Image 1 (tube, chains in turn orange, blue):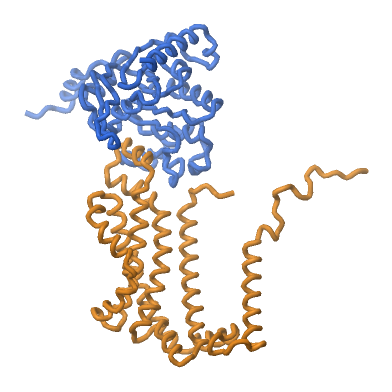
Image 2: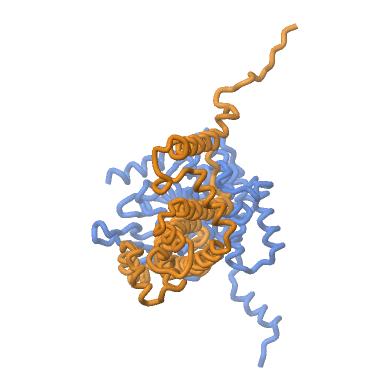
Amino acid sequence: MVLVSDIPSRVPGQPTPFQRHRGWILGGVSIVVLLVLWQLCTAVWGLTKEMILPAPLTIARSIGTLLVSGEFWHDMAVSGQEFAIGFGLAIVVGLVLGLVMGWFATLQKVLDPFVNFLNSTPRIALAPLFIIWFGIGIWSKVAVIFFGAVFPIVITTMAGVMNLDPLLLRAARSFGASNMQMFRTVALPGAVPYILSGLRLGVAHALTGVVVGEFIAANAGVGLLMVRAAQFYDTPTVFAGVVIVASLGLLFTSLLGLAERRFQAWKPSKS
Amino acid sequence: MVLSPSARDVGTQATTPARGSDFVVLKAEGVKIHYWVERDRAAFCAVDGIDIEITEGEFVVIVGPSGCGKTTFLDAVGGLRKISSGRLELEGEPINGPGPDRAIVFQQASLFPWKTVHANVAYGLTIAGKHSKTEVKEIVEGNLNLVGLAGFGRSYPSELSGGMQQRANLARALSADPEMLLLDEPFGALDAQTRDTMQEELLRIWSVKKKTALFITHDIKEAIYLADRVVVMSARPGRIAEIIHIDLPRPRSLSIRRDPKFHEYEERITALLEKGRKK
């Protein structure tokens, strides 16, 4: 008896389990290799001083110490509050301004010079000014964060509305849609992909605003914690701050990634 | 004195003309359309005097080379573009913007990609806001059934083939229940075999719905196969070269394209279009 299967065990183009999860596997391996080398160079072979470049395990220990201290959580709460208020305002103002500027050409022409000017300024340079205006409490940081995040959101949202498919607008109009109905049924959903990438850019600017704003002047916050640690040459704590801020950035970006997938179920899958 | 409702009814009945196959749905008289071309800093005359009357239930196809103003004219009928002179009337009323009495079937890719097929087909009804949810559902499902898309209501346009997208496009126009169906090269982007099927399907649906139809194409065979009358246009300026009655029996199957009479029409229209080009 001859056993012949119709389906070959492997078909060209069929990925092996490794190929299917290659991104995760290779990414994970490269991180581990880097951390091990780093640990060897610093703690084992002693090529650098802890004060210059602390070992990964030392940084991990610093993070642990921070996480159990009450002071750190107070700093986190202050920074979190600044971020939430500043970024929240930036989203509201950015979306509204971006949508109306994209929809009303006249308004766009009137406001564009200001938006362009402020968007091209390195806005973090305005931080000292905000401290004069709003003091060293949270509101100067809220202002830094707001100004950092609002322009990318305005500009991408506006681009989203201005780049709407004219065919779709024509179709909507042919069915007798009013301007308001066209805005709601075509402009808003059509701009969503742009809006989400604007929010991504905004998050990065907002996080920079939190940390750098606090570097300049603050009562409390993660940025202040890092500056203080640096003044005492407590390098492991500085690194701990970097890791924590970076992780938060990663968290927000992946949350937005989830939102993107949720809102773009209609897009053809890239297979 | 207040008129009783019944008395008013009698009054309106008397003024409404009896509708039949000679009732004029669309009337164009000396219609000219200009638009501004910023690159040339000059007004361009796209349509230079169109006269035509389209009667109830008629299928009229405009055929002409690109740039002959046929789409511009259809846009004007749809209310998407203003005419610069002449008269353009729908059931005796001048056309003044888009309205629920006309629906356009566009070329491909005019379905809203973020809406399901069902929501797309319901679009006109949602905009008008005159029907309850259950009514909308009923109308949409009826039309999806009619165009052969039953069961695809939950799909997104990107999940449909080109032919199926145009079926959905047609269903969207039909759902608005217009007096007149305007079709702007709806099968232009389809492959030849799908186009054949869609032409047959369109005639089947048209015979069910009995809508007055104005269809734009540059495909001569498509024009003859579909039309009661073919309007042949010449380009620059856009004018009617000739209107040809297509005297082929209905219902028509695609095999009618092998009929000697079909070939005669084809040769005549080809000759007219060639003459228009040489001018």
